[in-house]
Image (cartoon, rainbow over all chains, first blue to last red; front, side, top):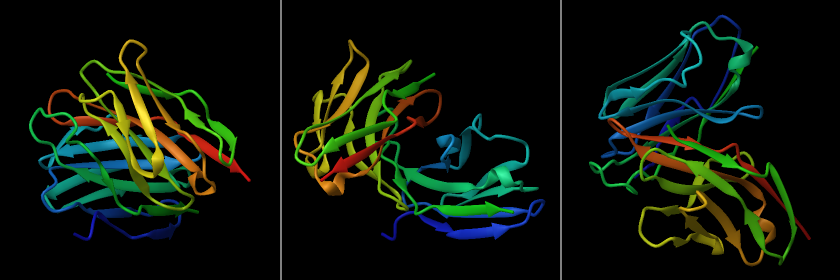
Length: 118
Length: 115
């Protein structure tokens, strides 16, 4: 398996532009998580999906952020319009959830997308 | 709601000496607990996990952690530090609510290993 695949690996854009980050989870995983990592705030959970349905988006910082998961093999995180304070590394992770069995939720992370907004 | 607190933002040890990274958690359900490691400019790798089986959990690279419910702690230890252990370590709590397992990371502890 190729693991969790994120693209782009690096993006530099100007304030006000739309940014779209993409994630392909591991085949067979039914949960997907988006995290943002900055020096100041550490790793923040933005949103997570279970079976393609958003379960908790309380970590999404503003309405400028949106995430979708149209099918089990693809998710996007969009920022529109982008601002310099959105500069961070964005990680996608996927996992398997086996009903109510705890311990099955081991996250596998992608390599991250480093976003710089000028 | 769950939360996780890593009590030290930085820990510095000498090579060959023991490592202790402290973590406390809170959870409304029976949680799963994890430690992840992140080396500089790298992704996140699972070190070990606790899933309501044995309270002493062994992970990769000689690390282990003990789940203590009465203390709500899940401290990470290693008997002898190696230079390659220098990295950032994250304590993670995951519990089941309504639909899915919300997984929260602690703020991280950066481990420095001196020669």
